[in-house]
Length: 327
Image 1 (cartoon, one colour):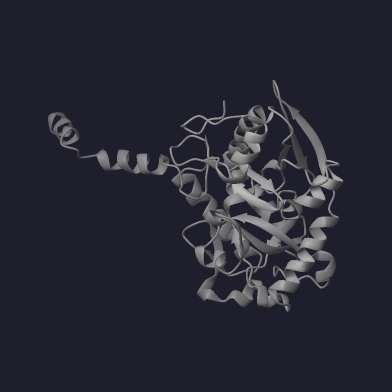
Image 2: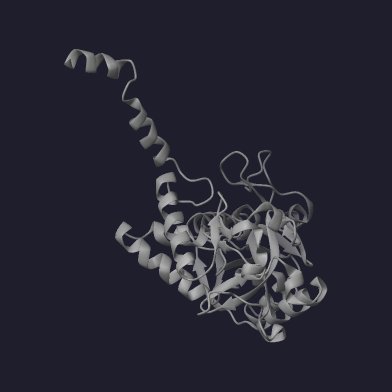
């Protein structure tokens, strides 16, 4: 009989368990950095948590909980994304996941379990930058794109969390008015500024709120009030890797080369690991025009210059080699 079992193993019998284990160890495509098995457990815990709070939501198969039967009135047009929660529990022991999931939904939902539109839009509504790949494609189509892959969504604080209002009509005002209010409230926020020093360059790291990255939408105010810079003649390099971080380097001299490398490393790291990912890219901004200057199509970050960024480098007597790396 043992010979038969050996033959079965050689012929592949009993390999189903190994294949199943291998599938479970694969990275989940949207709930990174969790594996498929870990993601399934997170979804079970999340569905149980919202059910206990009176919200009939179900997993959409990608990265969020949505109203059962498509009843968007259940949550006033809001959805419960799981991307940030996945990144939170990934760093915790397995036995702490249940409590972390419960705490996550407790801070996001009011006592009656039904997030509502703010009573005071003028004082409570913001605009938020969101990575389009972390939300349902149909939701991304309902709001404007800021830069490729990043959309602008009306949002408001709900407890200690943030709710996004993809159904703009639920706010009772047209998009133009919601945008005006959201931008005005972004301008009122204050930043905490720290300078990250490199070998031959420095980068300003701004933090302070869940909307710090979104203050890229009011970059002129950020430069003037937080960095004490008014309309930099050569522009600046900017990255917004995660919801609570904005990175800036104002172009002045050859230090832009080192700063570009620093921005790439910091942005890619925080985008990959932080809750609320926004964009892994670095952008060149001049006169409120945004130009993406990184390219990840090869799997590695490469400089993608051209346009006004190339003009700025030329003014600084910095040339680009044929493969796009500054020298």
